[in-house]
Amino acid sequence: MNGFGAAVAIVFGSGLAVVPDGLVVEQQIPYAELGWPVTHVDGHPNRMLVARRDAPDRQRILLLHGRAHRYEGWTDDELERPIADLARWGVARLVLTNACGALNERAAPGDAVVVEEVVDLQVAPGAEPPRLAATGGARAAACAGALSPWLRAVTGRYVAVPGPQYETPAEVRWLARFGNVVGMSTAPEVRAALRSGQSLVVVALVVNRAGWAGGHAEVVGAAARIAAGLGKALLPLTDVAWPDGDGDAAQATPAT
Image (cartoon, rainbow, N blue to C red):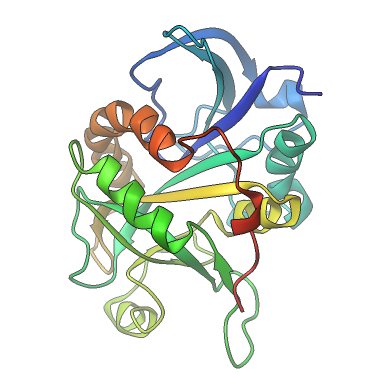
């Protein structure tokens, strides 16, 4: 039984934490009180908000403002725990957002990429890196359309790397073999969601071009400029992703 009465949760990446338009916050809970990893990276407030739609159905949605990262030393179990707890509470639908860098011309700073597949280079890949199914193909195109009034949106692949260093130009050329955007998160959450049978939409917000010589402060600043559009787009996105309220767990199967 879901003690929060929510079927949908949204996870926010670096500098992206907003309260989506159309939601009213009822409660705020620090991650530490939930036993979840607490990050010390700027742009991650480490709190879960219990919110409800300001509409007749008054549907509750959980907002996870921030996430921990593998490069901080957290184990897989610790990184996956928030998603596992959401599943245990009955949250069947997830929107995962992150701030990322563009690897090729398919995406540019300010764009949103609805991620169809996560290529996981955070683990030793062997001959071929693990590929995790994220947003289903037809759903990905529909979700990109839902975002497009507020953000230029495309579909693509996200490459998850360990971090915390940013990519060199040579690394960008190599990583572009695997996907369109790159970042340092999301893969553990996708793994946990697939294991739990939760329905996923993954949205990567492009804050820079990979290989650029900036730093985290610039990433957070660029993400904050995107966040206003993201806040307007998120509820329309969930309505398009799950128009009948069905979690559609059948899509949540690992890619080969």
